[in-house]
Length: 138
Ligand code: GTP
Ligand code: MG
Image (tube, rainbow, N blue to C red):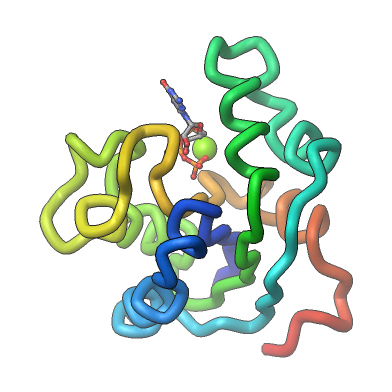
């Protein structure tokens, strides 16, 4: 059993899509073992996306992620990291497959409704960034 970290991004929370997105995770067999709604500070968004610091879209990404509330979650299941990436779909919604969250809900590559960890190391790091052990209930 594996755990991954997920964010329902501001564009989706603003459009009242939390439930529809969580339903996609649950339908695919992932369980929510931690969840909270937060408004990221600019510093938190900068820290979370530090790996993208040199990318041209970094400023816009930090701006968007701290503009309004998000829902951060820990998802658990068989191959949770890969499964979550499949449910999310391609980063650019124009390339996302039918039935994926980004195909159905994303507005653009910047406002693409969800984040999901891409590997076991980043999943562990990202979970630790937002959650303490006692907030995760398996
Ligand atoms: P995450 O799950 O959010 O990490 O998505 P990803 O792994 O599919 O994408 P990546 O890690 O490469 O980029 C992180 C985030 O930066 C993406 O989810 C996008 O929101 C944003 N991003 C990536 N490329 C671009 C771009 O060309 N323009 C803009 N505006 N944003 C981008
Ligand atoms: Mg990524």
